[in-house]
Image (tube, rainbow, N blue to C red; front, side, top):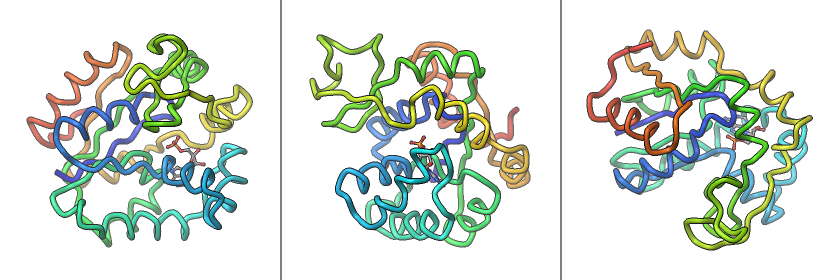
Amino acid sequence: MRLILLGPVGSGKGTQAGLISARFGLPHISTGEIFRTNIKNNTELGKIAKSYIDNGELVPEELTNKLVADRLAQDDCKNGFILDGYPRNLSQAKFLETITDVDIALMIDLSEEKIIARLSSRRMCSKCSQPTSLDWMVDGKCEKCGGEVYIRDDDKPEVIKVRLQKQAVSQELIEFFKQKGVFNKIDAADDVESTYALVKNVLDNGAKNND
Ligand code: AMP
């Protein structure tokens, strides 16, 4: 299954991608996570990406497209993948079309009010790289692996506002996938497992262009 997860920042795409990856045995490819790893390792890509990410801007297209093309060419993507955070706009979607087909583009939607509440309590695990939340952590550590957690620089309130404005899922991106007949949307207002039940229902039934 070649799956794309769309959705506003903070809608829970990363968490759902982690669950789908574990339960369907597909690689979870998060462009944001790849950038963060590069920033941590102080690579050339990381140095360039950091200036954009810290300001809530998108990383330039040539870099992002190449990174995705290289990642999808790896062996573990032969039977499918979960793309989380890519494509972010029509131009990236058109690039993606030149390297792979897509079976399902699933939009995980959430109201702005809930997004702000979730992002301000979001933490990232420095060990398993999965998102967690102040509400889920155990003894101040990641509830999944016990790792230390940190706050993403771009989860600061002033950057969240910019990201919400500049990185909203555009109607043209939605239309692009609707035209391909692979667009689906669910609302992620409920807890993680209830949202996953909605996700799984879409994955089990295949693309239907629901909206
Ligand atoms: P995310 O973890 O998906 O929220 O991404 C974190 C940051 O990485 C974003 O705010 C962007 O600055 C950058 N980023 C992630 N994916 C992309 C993409 N597809 N195109 C450009 N920049 C991206």
